[in-house]
Every structure is written in structure tokens, then in C-alpha cells.
Image 1 (cartoon, rainbow, N blue to C red):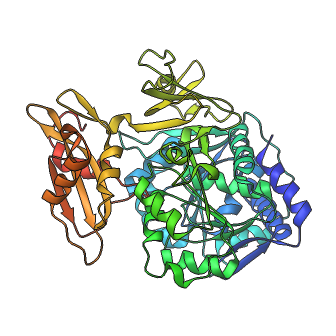
Image 2 (image 1 turned 60 degrees about the horizontal axis):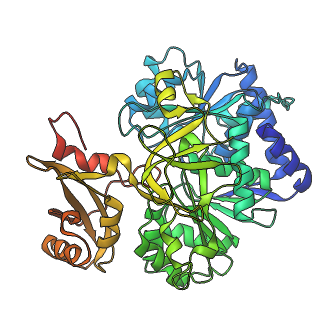
Length: 515
């Protein structure tokens, strides 16, 4: 099991057909395979040895796909970089991973120049420019003949994907070839990916969800349309132009999509499936999506970077508003075909159905560990079980329900409050575009429930109205005690998640803990 095998198989079957389209650039399968093999030769000529790390700093692009396969073709390990990180964070990841070669879009040169002198072990930067056929990157490919596939695989490391680092320094999850192929096989099985699929990549390719889709799609032989960055109008236009059949979005993106004023001005009849994941999906947003796009099937994958990344899957048939399966919308689905998933207490003892505990996962998708961090690895993986840090329960039919991210539980007066539950309640208000709920400090109760709310353009609502609405729907202790109304979008990470850690900071400044 090695990743490059999937490319060679698909290229053999579809050699003259299109594999990649990004802006004005289009590549056939045969050309794509050849460029990956030649880039691999260039990397080896630049000094890359088996197991060496190669990083990538860029927006979504065709070169990202080439990086994803050329590096393992040469025997190396990919290190995708979040292009929204600051210079110090990027420097830390490059230094921590021991990256020897960096491939980067020339537009990030100024950022790279700022930290390059502090990275003596970084031996070279290979710049590319999608608009320049004579960039260093293109010259490297042209100068070298195709390298024979080095065929590293199985338990060999394929990538080091760094977590967002919301609780400290980013940690590098080491994913093997087996990890990523296990996930790719599950994605194909669950989502019905095949050579008829036209897939639109709109989520960042540096993120585990986006990166894993690269390997899933190449293995399934799909046609891939790439958006450099997420923009609703560009996404709608791409679906219409390329007759896109499937895509993955995070809930924030779906929310903005279904509320876009031009949603129904484009021909979206080709679209068959939208998958979502990466953060909790407000049920009111999902219901809106089902109403606005009735011909589209929705599916959900739940997991994390450390799980390559999927552990559970909620099928399209459970995305219904009426009937006996309507309640399944609150679930993140059942275990994928090659995963064991269970709920445990604080002593790792399995809990009965219906009892709330931590979700843990075991199977071929569990990472090898955190790069150069045995203590964190030992804490996260115990007896082969990956501890997700998510609180949830399982029902009698094997459906899992996430109550909250454990660190996002608001503990007020000794009562646990799910921020997701409160957010779902607030999203029922028609004037609300986005919201985030978290705990802020209180002298007597330790924490109180606080909400940050963004209104839709032209709409108005007061904090008092939000609180009153919540009181009409929920037990009093769950309701926000304070609300901030904002007219600007909430801060989001490069993966589209609302950054609650940034919203919390002003309230917990100078204190020992932030939750």
C-alpha cells in the first residue's frame, strides 16, 4: 500500500483524459503523472533522501497535487503549511519538522524571506508562479527525466500534518501511507467516488480534510476542479461551468453558500453531493441547505487530523427533515467500515449506550504519533485508541452524537453546558448570520455562557432579544448571560472554523486558564 501506486493505476486507465483544472491550467492524467515523476527527480537531484521532509506554502493550485505525489514518489514526506499562519508559526513548523526543501508560491516570498535566515537546516526554496512557465519550479521539472517510483509505503511516513495549535504549539501528526490509503478507500466506499465524478476542491489543501481528498480523488480516478481560495460566487460559477458533481465544504462555507443572493442564478443541476465536516453543523443551517438544494444529497464525515481524518460517516439517507430518520441529523453518523469507535469514561472504561463520555477511535487510520513528541503521543493514543477530546454518546444502533468539544464545554455553577446546543438555538433567529458560544470568567460560577453574534446585512437584533429567545427554548442555566452583537464576520481559521480561542482571549487575559 503506497500512495503513488494509486496515481499510476488511474493514469494508466485514463491517460489522455483530464485530471486537473485550475483557472486556465488543465492537465491530462498522463501529463500529470509525468510531471510528478520529473519533479521527484528534481527533488532527489536537490539532495532529497528517503524520509526527508518537503513543505509546501501556497493557496490551492495544480502544483499542490503535484507536490502531494512527487514527494512520496521521491521517497519523501509532505509537510503542508497553513498559508494563514504568521511568520513565527511557519518558522516553528519548518524547524520542528526538519524540513529540507520548501516549495512555495512566489507570492509568499516576502513572508519566507522574513524567517529564512533563522532556518539553517532548510537547504532550498523552490518557487513557482502559475503565470510564469520559466519559474524555478518549472525549470526543475523540465531539466530532469522521470524518476522511477521509489515505492515507499505501508508504515513509512507519508506526511506530517500540523494541528491548529489552539492550546499551545502546533503538533505534527505523522500519517503513514497506510493511514492515508485507509482513509481514501473509506471515502470512495462511502461517497461513491469513481471516474465519472467531477470533484471541486474548495477547502484548503493544507488541511487534513482537503489533503486527504487529494489522495482519495486520484485513487478514484476523478476529474478535479481547483479553486485557489473559497469564494461563493466563484464556487457557483465553477459548478456551472465544469458540471461539478461533488464537493466538500465546512459548515461556515455551507452557511454562506445557501444564504448567497445569487444561489439560484447559476445552473447547479449537475451537483449530486455535498460532504461536510471539520466543525459542528448547526441544524438550522443544514435544514436551510436541504431546503435550498433539494436535488443535492448531503453527507457528513467526522474525525480529526490524527485520524487521517475520518472516523464516522452519516449517509445521505439520514439527511431528512421528516419521518423516522429525521432525528439522525443530530448525529455524526456510524463508524466507517475500518474503524472501531466507542465512548469511554475518564478511566478509559467503555460506557453504555446513551452515556456521555469521550469518543475514542481505533483502526488503520490512527496516526503513528506526534512528531518528536512522545509525551503527547502517549497521552493521545492509549492501547491503540486515539482519544479525540470530543464528548459524545452512542445510541443503540451505533450512531454517534457529539455533545461538544470537551474543552468547549462551559461549566457554570457546576453544570455542563454544550456550546453547540446554545449555538443551534441562536441560529433559529432569522436575523443571525453567524454565532459562537463559549465560557467567560465569573467570580462565583467560574464561567458563564457568553455569545458573539453576527447579524445578516440589513438586519438588526439586540443582545436582550437573543437571551430572551434562548430562555424560551432552553433551561435558564444554559442561556447566555451576555451577548455581543457584531457587524463583521467572526474570525475563522484557514480551514473555515470559527476561532473561539481568539474570541476568548480578551475575556481570559491575565488568568491561568482560558476555559
